[in-house]
Every structure is written in structure tokens, then in C-alpha cells.
Image (cartoon, rainbow, N blue to C red; front, side):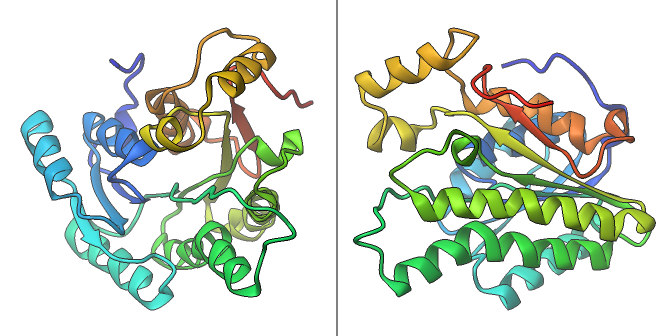
Length: 254
């Protein structure tokens, strides 16, 4: 997808994305590179093929660091390496998440801890390191989800985490605003990544969800790129502490 706008202030910026090698994260990496940004990302799986694809497409490669972002020390180390390569972070995008299906009855304490580590704890500590680096100000974008706004069943720890992300975003916006750091959340609707298509997207559920959307077209990872670029750029310089739904018109606010 060709992006509809160019955000000139992102050219040369230092961007760090969690989970930037697959799904929505890969689309974000591609989108920031197209704006001239220098991108670093962490991911659990090998993304060397994607890195080479981006090198061929943009003439330069993102900095990929393989690892588990729930290891806070490792996460902070990779963010420091991103700063060494590209300068202190201008933009952090907390994107990586896991929406593994589960029920209240089957939940163990170990599974709870793992889900919270992935979907909330890693976000918090990425924000901590980003704020340390952003001496001259910066932008933090936390990916949430409309799932908790809809009160979806089937993954209660995931929805709990996303409600927490929105609350954390609002509090950190207040705390970090005096340092000229903006913190916003982006809440996607049902984005049909390959994982979603392979694991969860039945024809019946897809039809039911599309019926709830105002816009009758399923969302793709590329639909999340322009809204993220907008939040990262000075085009949104007066926005902080907000949660922006990008969902085709399922939920409403205001």
C-alpha cells in the first residue's frame, strides 16, 4: 500500500519497534523506513529475510535484534544498541502482543504471568528506557486494542492488559508531558494478519465482525501504518494521553 502522506519530520528520526519483523510490526517498520526514519526492532523469531527485503526496497536495512522482550534487561540493552546505531530514540512503538485464546477456568498463575509479561510489563519497561533516552522530547505509541472496549470474551487476560495499556498511557502522558514526551495509544480493530487468518478467523466470525463495522472492508496491517506515522510526527504535536481507535467504525468515543 502506498502511504497517502509524507511526514517530513520523521526523516532521519530514531525509531524502535517491538515485534517489528512480522504482522502489523513489519508493516510499521516498512512504513517508517519509507519516511526516511532509522528503524530498530526486537523480535523473538529470526527476521533476517525481512531485513534483506527492506534493504532491497529502501536502500538501507532496519537494525534487527533477536530476543525476548519480556526479559527487561535484554529489552533495555537492545534499546541502548538502537541509540548507539541511530541516536537516542525519537519514537518508541510498543506493538508486539499475544492474543492467545483462553478461558477464566483454564487459566493458571504461570499463564497469567506470561500473558501480562508480554502484553503489559514489556510495554511499561520499554516506556521507562525510552523516557530515559528522550532528553529533548519524543513520542511513545502504545498499541492497545478495541477488544476490551467491546468486552470481548475468549481472552480475558489480553483484554485486561489492553485496558491497562490505555490507563498506563494516560498516566505516563501526564508524568512525561513536562519533558516534552507525548504518549498516546492506538487501538486497532480486527487486523487480519496471517496469524489471525491461520488461527482465529473463521468465516462466521469474520462476517459477524464486518457487520459491526461502519466501513465494510476488513482491516490489514497496512491500515495501521498511516495512523501510527501521524501519532509519531509533529502533525499530532498537541495530542497526548489519547487512545485513538482505528477499527473501521466498531467502537465510538467522545
